[in-house]
Image (cartoon, rainbow, N blue to C red):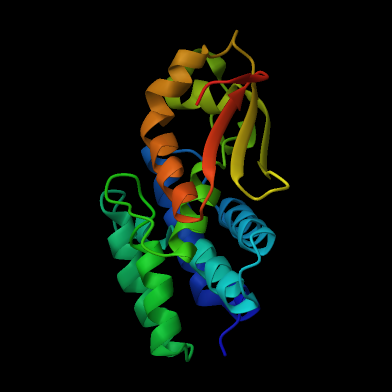
Length: 219
């Protein structure tokens, strides 16, 4: 069976990820590089392994996570759907079974907040892992005087941690934000739709989603 290791080392897939990130860089978006997709894959593994999902489900979630942003090479708009179509062809060429391929592309096609639905546990894990990757190192621009609100919100995050409660009923994103760079309300202006999507994804995994900012529960 196709493994995450097979996908991660595939040079064609890695090239699409790198070139998609280069395109987003030209458009002024934050980091969507190999570092981002690898972190998303690691978080998706943490989520499903903590919830005692099967090794195969974990593997599929990691594959979907690693490939989820390749559609940005086509266009930022509807990149989830473009990426799903690209992933279908690539995975088919790599010998993925129809069932595995279907699960992966449905997760990829449902990860962006504009059209996302946590249609299965793999999609839910991908949504949570992707939307909670908020950190200063994703900001490419280092000139604070020219920051837009997206730069400010991400750069203000000094610490970010994802945890699942011991009873496996609560998924929490905990952030430490420098409010001198970005007020908390700016964070909500940019990320509210993403956090509401995280609530749906957590519910799909029989959990509730909580957001804690500077030690205060805000969602």
